[in-house]
Amino acid sequence: MLISALTIILYFAGAVTDVDMMLNWAYIVLGIAVVCVIVFPAFTLAQNPKGAVRSLIGLLILAVVLGVCYALGSDETVVTAGEVYTNRVALKVTDMGLFATYIALFVAIASIIVCEIRNSFK
Picture: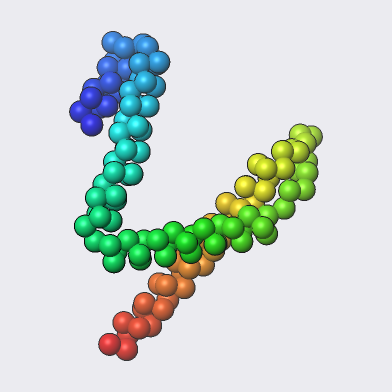
């Protein structure tokens, strides 16, 4: 984090004008983050197999929701401001993202309401 902050300070101070160096550093940090996201949960799963089953169930539910959202998505051509978008995959994935966002919003609001009602009776 110190190196990242230092590169930003040096860039804005004008001491470093090489944007490629900053992008390379960003790629290195991203690579470290991806490795950590993969390696540390693997250790946790090895230590707690019951937690692994719960995680896999959560991933399965997420995959089903995304699959349903993808199936609901439309791949119709979109025309906006004179531009025509015909990339069917991008259109379908965009719709999938929108539907998944709507479902996540609904689940978040519903869980807030249910938790508040449940806590009011305790």
